[in-house]
Image (cartoon, rainbow, N blue to C red; front, side, top):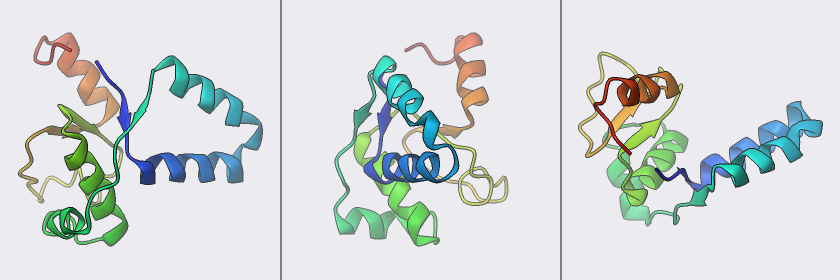
Length: 113
């Protein structure tokens, strides 16, 4: 199993930890290192525009474009408004869910890394 994080998400995580819990920054770095986190390449603008067909909110469309570019099995998020909205059916080549959804899928044997 690989942990791939888009450059936008990584930058946002860094900014949030710096703003809200600066002392935790080394812990974030340790967790990303222990998880052997890889950074996905930045998407092309055409990929971002394509992602906007799924998610109209531009910052989240960029995150989705980064995920599409990374070609994951799972896109893990807590964003209920733009990614986990039951009324919005995202037709993507990968599963979208919460960390708990991924863990449950592994437990159920539906996803074997």
